[in-house]
Image 1: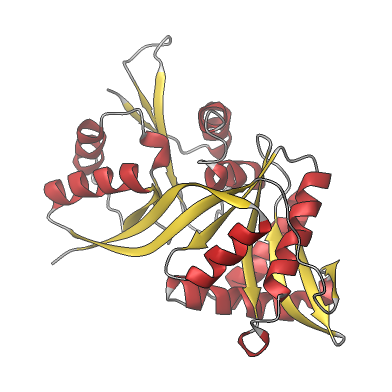
Image 2 (image 1 turned 60 degrees about the horizontal axis):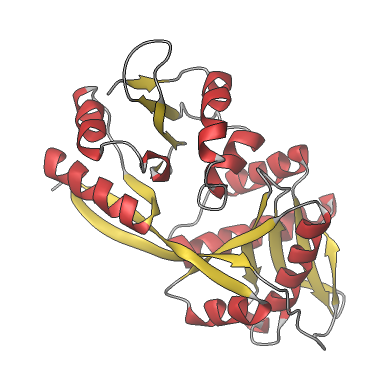
Length: 283
């Protein structure tokens, strides 16, 4: 079971894109990264797994990691986990954690920790939803618009606050700003819901990758929550994605936030499956 590391991003994209497109909703994050460009501020980990050596070998897995984030391991669903982990550890690789579909991720984490002696901790539990029939809320004060360059300060602020609430850490504002630049470059947008002349809620939305458009992050300022702004801006993002040609619209919701899950279900989103992020701690 040869494991290949790719130092050339273009080479990895050309090989892995079709593999991830086999399950475009489940691999929406990977497909977005491959289309938008793998961040280059630190060297990424890009690997593929093959059933044998040789030019005619069949691809059976792919995984990627952009530091400081965990390994996206969902693309290893068809590869033998024991062999993959063994080759990674033998090659001197280290990981801070993994993220992906719950069953695949927990299997990988158990094997990794058995081999390395690390201790796993589940830090984020999410549910992946896809849009069924949109049921947009009515009567929400205000309206939406596509964010402009002058909105950068509020977008950076909202992104940092979202990360702090959802993932427990505040990102470098410069990194948050860089995501805005990258989004604009490939045609993704951020929508703002405004009320009383001021922004109150935000939703990011991506142009379709393999037919799938992902919404997120969705964030409403704490002082104005409970007024329907988050639901309204999410519905606007759904319409934007469908107009951009999406055949499926998806989003992730934090399972520790039951209110957001109820909102998305009322909008017409239905569950696809659960995802987890697990951190590895060396005792």
